[in-house]
Image (cartoon, rainbow, N blue to C red):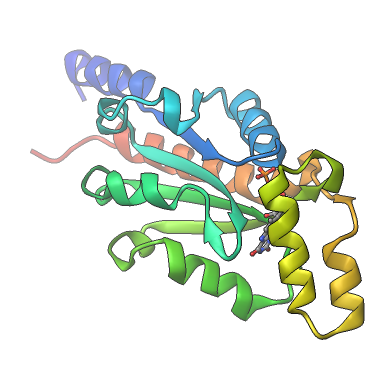
Length: 196
Ligand SMILES: Cc1cc2nc3c(=O)[nH]c(=O)nc-3n(C[C@H](O)[C@H](O)[C@H](O)COP(=O)(O)O)c2cc1C
């Protein structure tokens, strides 16, 4: 590889980018996004502060969202940005109250909010969230109570209305490792001498 090609590869590597886009309501998703941003030195944006053209400069996108009544908070944003996302590697972290062994339910959140066009390039991580009843808006308290009312099982009903906080930095370990591995493998392929 001559020095000009090497230099251009190194410049490309320098600018190889990822970004984090996240949407939650009460801080659990934001906390995970902030930890990721620090650990991976990536910029993090809420959809309200996001400019569309930023995606086109990226090699990968990390999307974070919490779940309310079965729907990802970031669903609308994903749909609005489908054409831009369709060519990107996506790491999707979903923050929710559903335990990891309830696979069907977790899968239904994906089916309901992530269009099939981009599912193939999505690597998905379910992360445990938090709920402090006192901090919820009037409407969320109401929704939660309605949900509990419609739940027959006594234990589940009680659990739904009980505060919890399972947000821990170590929950991000697998995601952080996978992103580092991906960025590393892309970097390696960029540095391979190209056959002309
Ligand atoms: C009104 C309400 C509805 C919720 N609906 C669901 C749900 O359908 N599935 C689920 O797994 N968790 C559900 N949760 C739990 C949230 O996803 C969890 O509290 C999450 O940590 C919120 O993250 P955020 O603070 O970033 O929004 C619900 C919580 C509330 C308050």
